[in-house]
Image (cartoon, rainbow, N blue to C red; front, side, top):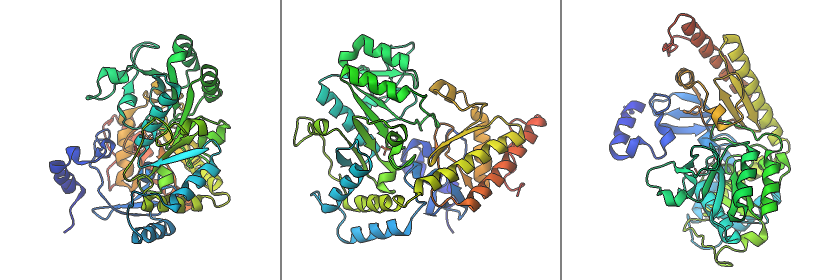
Amino acid sequence: MASTNAQLFARANRTIPGGVNSPVRAYQAVGDTPRFIRRASGPYVWDSEGARYIDYVGSWGPAILGHAHPEVVLAVQKAATDGLSFGAPTEAEIVLAEALSTRLPSLEQVRLVSSGTEATMSAIRLARGFTGRPKVVKFEGCYHGHADSLLVKAGSGLLTLGHPDSAGVPREFVEHTLVLGYNDLDGVRQAFARQGDRIACVIVEPIAGNMNLVRPAPGFLEGLQELCTAHGALLIFDEVMTGFRVGPQGAQGLFGIRPDLTTLGKVIGGGMPLAAFGGRCDVMGKIAPLGPVYQAGTLSGNPVAVAAGLATLRLIDEPGFHDRLAAQTQRLVAGLRKCGCLAGIPLAADGVGGMFGLYFQHHVPRSFAESTASDLGTFARFFQACLSRGIYFAPSAFEAGFVSMAHDDEVINRTLDNVGDVLQAMAHDREHGDSDGMPAAGGLR
Ligand SMILES: *Cc1c(COP(=O)(O)O)cnc(C)c1O
């Protein structure tokens, strides 16, 4: 007999720390048992018990076409037949670099790596190497992977040094990282006024998706660009999540901003380990072997990952792709708001392109502080009840959600029917003072 999720989780915990290979998968924030996924197709994933879920995680962003799109799978199979890795250049990686550069004009040159973490870590090193300056400005609540110097949380008070956000990161490793408030342009202005000649770069999620979805305030990104230009610092857009997700040219296309460097990942790998960083020719020319900034990777430009990326980019080139994706996302967002309203539960929702946020509060947040004010207990109950009805939202209140091209009207409607019932049940429990009450798993539809 097949193992249950709980059995697999117990077994995983014996050999894998916490039972998972990336912490959010452990469901700690939502108090449930992780679903062990056996397979996925289109908008669905199936767990080890055979239960099917409508998936709004989409592998945390890559699955923009839906899971296991036949053309992507075929491209991967073909590439694999010709060899899994060469550690030597290939024509396909040129084609992918050209495809990225053509779509994002700011990417005059681009280098392929294997994860978003590697892309941002390399971009930061490059910015420091190019400018000869040590300091990096990042924003509270933005996630840029788990490189040491970016695992920083804000200290107390403006412009104080950041603190390591993980054990194992010595204080000295983050002393050059300034952590400022997202959408707080004044804070950035002050930082540049004090030590502008020491700041190598500003790295930002142009639409934040790792503190739930938080949009940039009007003028914020433009202000960052002006300050960087005025002080000779580089502006890095971390578009690992937003690249090809929020529009055909990512967030930089939406806002009409040309960053000096951009990092990409997730969608461009089509579900395979692939990411990239690129930008200005004069900056990229500082990377080895041309320049003194070292960067390398045994599996960089891996032919199977490149094949998946190319097939994915080809498919999202279809005319109207992003318009349709955005329309589906907006249907979901509008529906979520309406469900909250009908149940009398404060629920805000927002969406950009194929990503969305849902927030158990009255208004869409504009900062880390506002985002973290969300009602976590309500989120956990909502998450569990949705999951038990086959709707798979991210197991954390601070992650954006993702819609794919396979989420058609019928899938969205079915989602909203279930969400509506879940919220009604939660409202009912509230009214009857049963604040911890979970809507019974099987009891409703
Ligand atoms: C996911 C993500 C990363 C890290 O990418 P990995 O492939 O998980 O290392 C970096 N930046 C942003 C904005 C991300 O969303």
